[in-house]
Amino acid sequence: MVNAILGSNYDLTQLLARMQADIRQLATQPVLSHASTGSDPGTPGISTDINGLHAFDSSGTETVTISGQDGSVTIRGTLNLPNGSINNAALVNPIQPGSAGLSDPGHAYTTTSTVYAQQSIAVPAGFTQALVFLGVSGGAWNNTAAYDYLYVAGDINGSAGGSTPQGAAGSSYGSASAFAIRTLSGLSGGSITVGCRIWTGAAGWAANGSNIANTNAIVQFLR
Image (cartoon, rainbow, N blue to C red; front, side, top):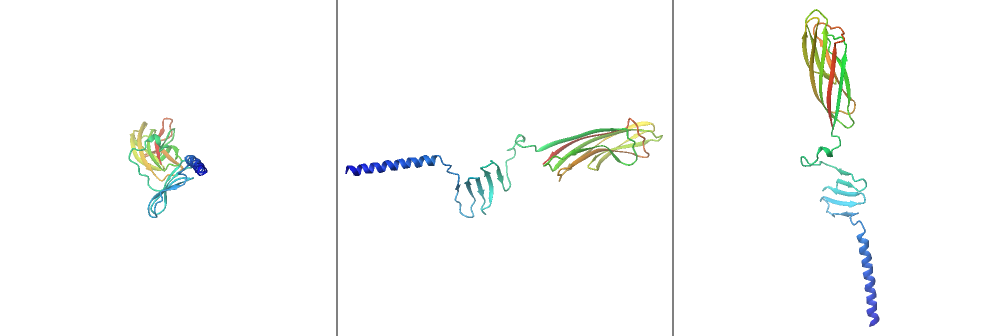
């Protein structure tokens, strides 16, 4: 009888020791290193493994992955967020500025519209749109004996904006300013050109040290 009791106590002691060891092992194991909601086919589900967390739609297609290797999040679909939930400080360069300016003096001007003070602004990598604001001005000495007009217009990528005429009597100076605005899309590298178009109305005006063409542009690049 005594031996039976001692034997039972011994078996119980071993059992408790094994249970304690098992509990310690469970407490140190990543219990969700491989788990699943166990959803039936046709029902969205979530699973985890050594590579991270995975979400599936009703067709079994993985729609969201949170990587356990590098912490990246991949969403295969539309990410809908409430307005204002992401501020500009959390974004990486959503807008990239650009600018250009040049003064180009001394040219002779003819009745043919010609671009002066041209500048190029490089399109940053990854940006596909641009808002371009261009201001130009030009002035010249009318060396002819007749009253004539000087015309000035902005030029963006070879396309002229509206022109501004300025009359000048013979042997006098005329100057004018103009603006051009463009919204460009479908960009992929390359550059945007800006410049000042100048021409005269009736006759050419000779080169003069006081003749000038000015270009000043601001660009906002968008992704």
